[in-house]
Image (tube, rainbow over all chains, first blue to last red; front, side, top):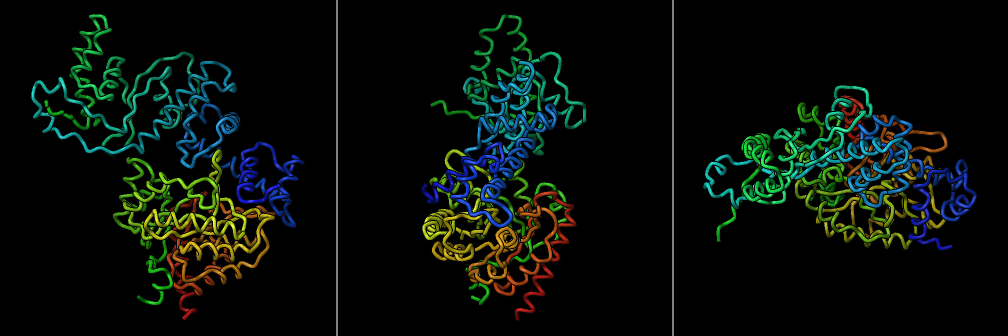
Length: 280
Length: 284
């Protein structure tokens, strides 16, 4: 058996994420003894096992820290089982923890540890929300909107002006109001209970000027418009695309409310610039 | 250039510092305690913006900030991550950290990042491998790289030399600096049964630009470097020995688990200041 650096590292990387104690597996213990010396108190397998246990403690702590509401919902034992299964399915391959937690929502959506599909859907929603909380907190900065720039725009500018939204803002649509429930569980200390029925929600999660993260619930039409603006579609064409598939009553609703939506987004700091391309 | 400056690669002695940790942010920013400098974990600030970088800027307004990393994996066998190094260099431009440190270890392979600091086999081949990578890192980051000795819980059958001989060989071949973690020397000495004084005496003093002090957790058959609890007396003794040997070097108290009130951390930093002063006066 080769004993070069790559072989040593390959062996340790193969056993450190394992669930079972290495000394309990005679074959692994024998292999460990080829690479690791042991000492008077600990066998080679027992020495390697210290790193296996540390791997579990470290990653369990990261998942609990990043998904506190999911952990509250599951309780300690079930959250441990969730973390074990997740790490088996998605062993961390990259240094940034943000990359490690990326698959948590899709994993939660299929995890058999939830008794029902509703539980899986809820957990996936909550995991997406908790990742978005992290992203918004550390997302890119943008200087606030210059009101004079807005006031100085010509009337026809809205046909082609691109409304620049805050780069840290996130649009999220949920089957359950996880944003309100997370706040109730973690801030108000209410018991973490799966709701009896879904209640879809469209929100924008954003950071205010004091860098505090907030959510804002949006009507579905406002949510769609916000998404079109985020894609870089100018306001007037975006309104056209939004209204086109809607029945007339809803079109009128959009027309009546779009001014208020835009004012609200500006007041919240979600609109940070208006980019008017030159007509040439 | 003064003699002490020459000894420390021309890098400044910043006195006693503490690790900047989340539970202490507001109190540090509001009360501005008298510490010489703050150390950050670089990876916590490799983000596009928002709260972490705003907090970093608040720290930078009042303190020198030194960057300390945990994911360089200088002893890894996968290629160096140049995107990571580019981001690290951008952060260095923000912090103006006069040096940057990480660990003499490996953290994973292509398919697994353990997020741990694993020891390397102490062989001539590994010295060459690590030193070559350290030179590239140092050239890329454009500031001196200080490598830190890690605590270890295993030793390899393939090792050909002592840890201190390995450490010395790497930093000399790489021409890089040393971050001497005195607690890690103590932890490894207890885990592997060597005399920690021999280790301290063997370190190339002229390359030591920073010292780490921390607590640990003793499990009986082995000790884990948890950065929990106060520095214990045998580690203070090693620190005295190190200071007498290397001179006035920037020293940091690390406390990452069961993080105490800031006052407790500052009391530990004050103890480090007193011990350092005493050791320096005895060294004269």
